[in-house]
Length: 224
Image: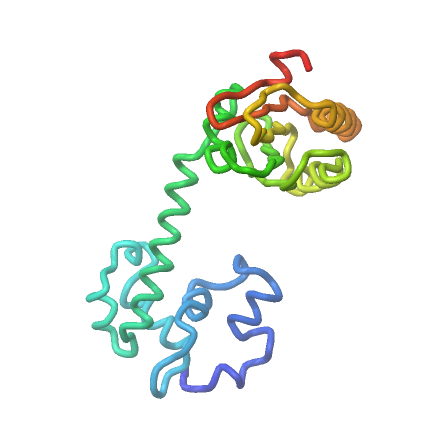
């Protein structure tokens, strides 16, 4: 039943096209696996091959599968086995990173510790942490890169994703490549405008933290 060509399927039922149109969460396990495999084997299309793999190795056991386990399955060569193992490993790393991530943001020190990737950058990065009611991080986004000013860091750029992610609180942060922790007039202006916008939208700005390679300054603790 799986010897028909994928091209014979209606366009939106082909795994890759379905993913593009509806997103990956709308695909079955077999369809997701088919996207990774890309092609089937002789006399069997990629959906048939994916279904057969899932019968031989369940989703629960896939993270523990080895290269040798995969290449024993008819139709799985070295290229497909490597693609599957790489995808599984990437998923593991994403999961582990999420588990060991910042979690609950309680202090400016937590923010500083989580910004290792930008603290020593030669360019200013403006970052927003989107939080739920328990101060748990929902998402972190870099809003702008470059000199911080009101035109680059517009309330729309901060609060549109906050609404999208159902955040009720945000923490603002940016680095100072100069190493000076003193907020500039532009920093103060941006902070004021974002706080005012947050009040209108009902999304509280909990703090704004300036970081350098070795230290940090909290607007909240400094009464900025």
